[in-house]
Image (tube, rainbow, N blue to C red; front, side):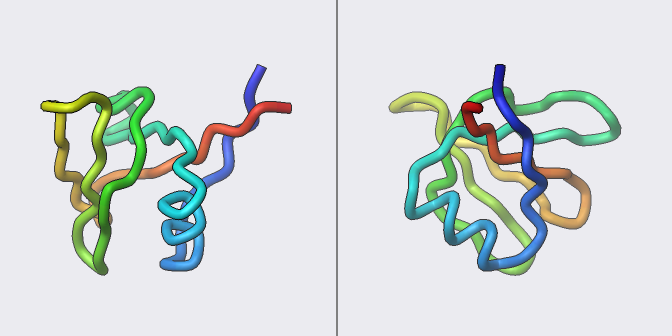
Length: 71
């Protein structure tokens, strides 16, 4: 089982980016990205990648981001 930690600040996103941890992205209470890593982010957008050709762009204001960590 994994622990979910919400990513809120730039420091949270930077830590997830540096460690390469998997994240989940929710929009309107639905999972839109289940297991990907952060490629880059800024104050408006987070770019995630699940596979070589699968890039997704998420608006920070519209989504919730959670870091998946193992217990």
